[in-house]
Image 1 (cartoon, rainbow, N blue to C red):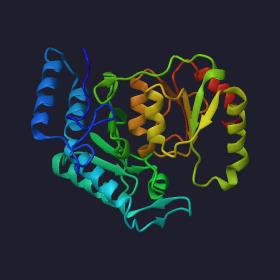
Image 2: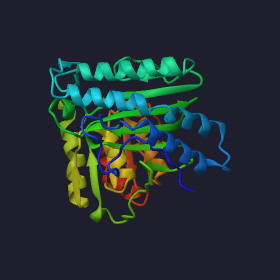
Image 3: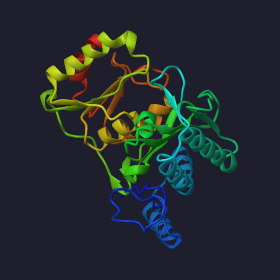
Image 4: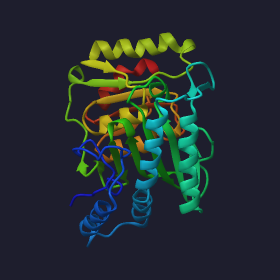
Length: 313
């Protein structure tokens, strides 16, 4: 049975076109109703746990706000972004980040008043009881500020510390990835899975670098050197959410990075796991959202990648 989590018909790269002038993700109401009807048929007769049902209900509520925020981000990308720095000159925030998070927070507060929100720009905590929305309003802000298409809206859902659901939408690519715990991972309506690669010499690895990299440069270059010596190639997209989704979709075979935050990884981590991948720290321990090192692989390569990166523990 296919689990259709394309958030009520959000356009993805699988869709052929959209009417001129529509925001990416905009869906005609008649089409949206037909998608909901199809989903009801798909789920008929299948019993969901309360966690699955509540996580899915929250993801299903998102299409209109995701379409709205996506349109705003694409419009603002060519305008004056009022770029400011945070921790250093590589750590940026734009008015688009702030506007995106404000709209997403308002949506949660209006529709799920008992839930909590943790966002990159507005703060928050993972410790609250019940559901917490872990939001990165623009993952890949440097890409975004330079006019590149590799950025994403990332929304993870946790319930009492467990990642229950996740959505990553890439506005410029009109692509949406979703997952609900124990129900698989999807790109639009297409179920996805990690690559079958078993030999590190055939692996394409993706990574990212922390903003405070000046004092870690030799350490970081050591990891790059080891990957280049043992694997087919290495890439950097500039967005951890994109990296994790493309790993889950079999485009990459492994992803490693350090000093990530919960909003960077929450949604993508679940999408990788639900696609059959494995996510740990550099030391091989199951990854938790508060951890500062992350290794995600297709599972087949995990032990080999731990050895390749052992100097980074």
